[in-house]
Length: 466
Image (cartoon, rainbow, N blue to C red; front, side, top):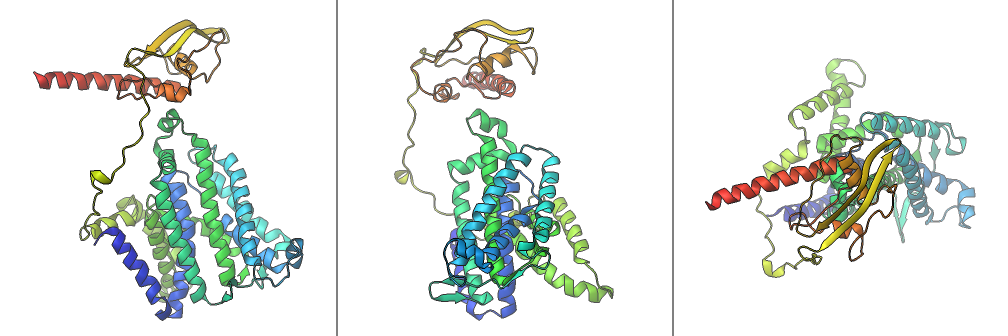
């Protein structure tokens, strides 16, 4: 049995047994599915893209309050000329929640994602608290009392009033999202997203706009949280600020970390583990200790220490390694079924691909480059070595090559045969082409390291031939 077959069997077993499960089990599975939607977004945000957020519960609240307000306030439906009891109101509430969450995430992301280190998590805590108190202090949202009378979802002639019926929608949405995100991470866009955590400089040197991708992932995580809030509102049929406070946001992040912040299925494992532990520890610990209190928080803290110390990548990778021992690998596609990738035609060896003449750059009274002229030909490897990493002649020259900084003198740069600079530059280092890095200082060091590695490899091959 392969991984795909095992996954399909688990899905079929879940939906096949859904109608026979006890009501309490179905309710717990509903909450696990809702929490997993948020945790999956945090896996994309934290584990894949390398950005920590404590404020995802606020986006859950945006999705919940958007649909609750639109479905229960007659003036809201009147704006679209719809009856207050229309079955389409919840679906319009979903769209409204998506629009609000995307807009707020884009605005907050544009501000907070510029931060780095511990300042970014602190920034997410700040706006998470702000949105939580905003929910409780707006009178048209019911204040801290909340909003009741949220109608159930309706699919055609079917009204999803029970947790058993709505749970099918929740888990169907969750599994479809997991499948879509797996495909996303295996695509070109996904590889760019994966580079955000550890390889931003290299990604930028290859033309990836990392700032734009960071905001994209942030908005994606917000939309998944908003979907969870929308389903939560129509499950509970009541909304108040309590489920969207900072403590719940920390629990969402805890689920992603415990399950495996770098694995999509780890979000589901973490959500199931934390939800079940929280449910049973709240009943068991007070009876054991003889007093009431939130003792499960202590257990969660100890569990976090254990996971970070023993399972730094989360529990899912360890579980997957155990299961993989009994699974066979999926068949590899034969060479006949593989299609050759299209290749850019490389310039002829010796032809000029980059030409610069009389390039100068001044920083105030400091002359970094004084009428530098050079021709780079296909098949050559050039390295510019400067005295420092700040305002050095080598860094300034490399920075001028892609015309990121204008030269003080003209002409600046001439590209032979026209075309985009990136296409002309990245003709392929391994094929003897030429590449100019966007990050000039680090790019120059990387190029020098490549030249050194190439010289060592040539020496080893020469020795092996002897």
